[in-house]
Length: 421
Figure 1 (tube, rainbow, N blue to C red):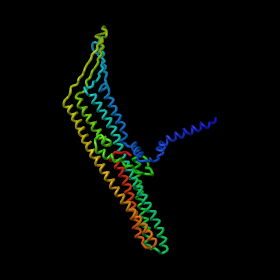
Figure 2: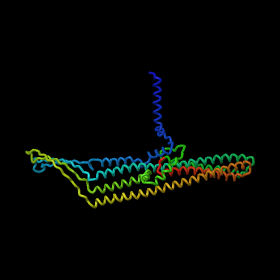
Figure 3: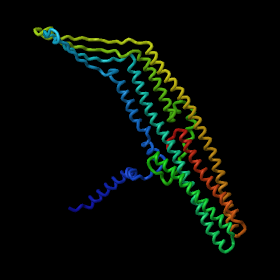
Figure 4: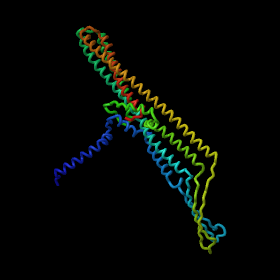
């Protein structure tokens, strides 16, 4: 049976659509490196051990909310009992008893427990964002460490290529008698020094790649671009009211922990005794074999007494935890403000250093160009050329480090502001 042209086109379109929808999955399964810092953070987040338990914490908090919304503070219970005289007179005495016990909420306890469960749900959500921000911090540091190692290796390879080109030129001129053996030895020594630098840079790069792969589970992308700087108004917002400041994940978590601790304190204040218990009893009994069974129904109310020292112990422990959470929240606020100020000043400093490094690189490149012309004309010796070339390579290295340092400073400022990639 032949396929019609329009059916063939429909099948081809469907296959193309399925392939397009599954490209991300196929890329992840084949180990293709992620394309951006944000995707790397997401991948590291899925592999992070702390993130593995957050779903369970959230489920625990929601289960506590369901319990607090129930009709009873604890599950009801059923008891069944039997009494007879078979071991004694054996005259047919028989008694069956069934009892249903239902715990009761204390006045105001249900609302307080529901509020405590809500605070735990909010704390679990805030902790998820804060842990993800911590993962982003690790990824950012690994990202720029790897970028610096790649840059150092590339610069070392350029130095080696330049040294080999110079050695070739020196050998030619040495053979025709224009340069001495000392110059030839200096050129060869420059090659050995450059090769040693390449080996060191390869070892550093391998270490950075292994650290990155351990953190993210994959290799880094070839193009490691820098982040966009966060909005400058966030710095002013975090210095404003507490509602705006809680946009920062660490501040939001500290505030959520404090609210949860105070909710537990209120719950301890309201829970001054165990839950009362209302029981419904049904008894079916007879006196001997000749008597018919009779039924009776009863109600029992159990009210536990309050123990003062135990109440004070639980309340004091909850209050101490809440006050400690408040102190930790204030410390976190100060720490975040200091970290933002330090990151901002570091970025300003790296901007200035990058400008100076760029000027120094331009001057060194100009000097190197003049020295190479002078060496070709025989006006400059090889030692001077090597010294100027070393200065140019150092200036290039400083510029690359400052460029990456500025990009890393932007990432650290975003991290201090609580902004995810």
